[in-house]
Length: 253
Image (cartoon, rainbow, N blue to C red):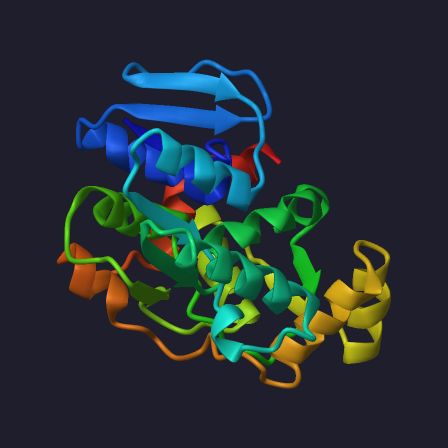
């Protein structure tokens, strides 16, 4: 039995789907009730990382795969986002279990935040327009997680994960426009406007963290990592392929 926490999230859900497709029994933990696919046992609840790993050990579990972040390799524990992931990685490393760390770039699914804007027009506005990111399909992250959970040879590994190409936001918007058959346009915020907009959505330390990532260059999400094709034996999925698979989400918006 494989336990997936956050099983309704981007990566938890993708990992669950990958494991079910491979025929593995899965226990899915979520804070909300829902109907699960055949072969999945659902449980409601939430547990902190240390307590959860202790429970896994007590039940005879031997392996843990952690969804971390591209921020963790920076080692900057003064950064609010990086600190959380650095501490989570430390807990898993010290758990006594065979561990694997996944350190993905930004998710292609982040483009879904544009749905409300596209429901009312053809212009997408946002921050950090000059930074090209090799965003990764959550399905690829889930496939790697499933591999690390079910096959040997991944213990003690930290895998940086990316998509197959680095794209500017305006390039993502153009690709999405072609997929949807719409003439979409990107308008980037200035850094000053970005700070104002982001601070209306999240605490200032998190805004500072994202500015450190994408303005100060604390992390590198532009470099295309070879890890996904090396592990999965196929190319990482492109943003266009992701957009085609999720076109209905934008159309319904």
